[in-house]
Image (cartoon, rainbow, N blue to C red; front, top):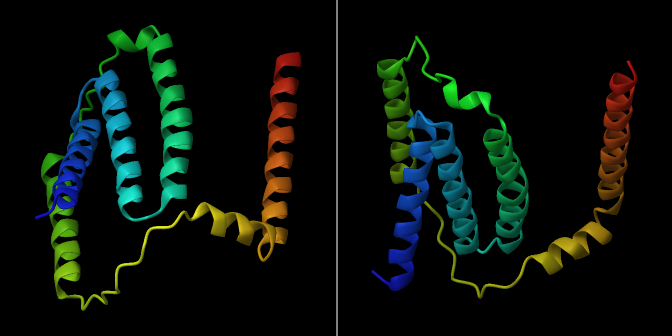
Length: 166
């Protein structure tokens, strides 16, 4: 095994382990910080796949936006420290059986599939290709999406303003 394979395995184990902590932890703070490691692990896996744009997007949007917002919300809310997050109907056995069935089906599919292996290509940045396609072939859908997001932003601002006036 090469050094790249060892690093990938370490990143994969940390990512899956931190995702398990997110699901199994009883503390909301531990879950949120474990989600940080999960998001970073996914970004590193994107880098290994040669998807640098997706890796940057993962870090900017999920780690930089959503996770920081979640952490601020948890830390600034004082009532969550006395809240018991344990549920009465904790379905361990059915959940384990479903997870085992999904794992077995994915393992069977991945081992029995005749994967087409291509020759290694040099890693090149994908942002140039994405930018060129956005401004040439996909210009109309890109502009429609930006107008739709602008309308949603204006609508959200109007809803907030109306509720504040009431």
